Image (cartoon, rainbow, N blue to C red; front, side):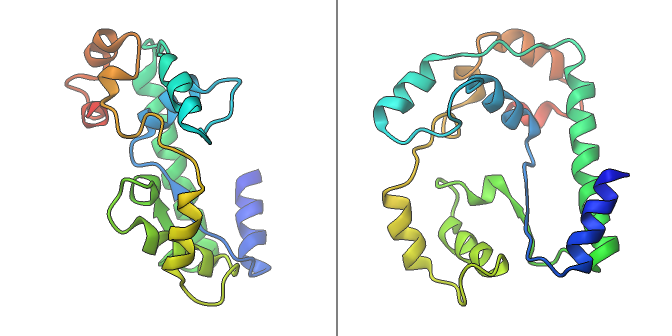
Length: 168
């Protein structure tokens, strides 16, 4: 109910917004566990090394249900924005498409800045210049098997499920 009111207000007030969601919510969950109590992004190569040393243990009991709940919440959020604002065209971005390793990430970041009314026009060069002084990828470029402490348990818990593709 609260989320419905917030979304309705954003749309009624014509507040610039974007939705940036994760297709692979397991990766978001693992990232949260890995950086618990720490900055979620590394600003230096040394911080990358430190954050990569931490291999979180993912609680597997009820994991499929937690993932399903988050997927449903993402779908509900998109549905609410479509209902109240009429569309999410050009405003829905996927994290996996935006991270530095993704093709066209510079163009997507540039588009996002325009959608948020932060820039008047897309400026990919500005994004490129910012990226040079930005954060470093910590886990996104590594296979999940190298990121978690209990890969075997995780693979067994989600293997054969509708969320098995999130292990990749």
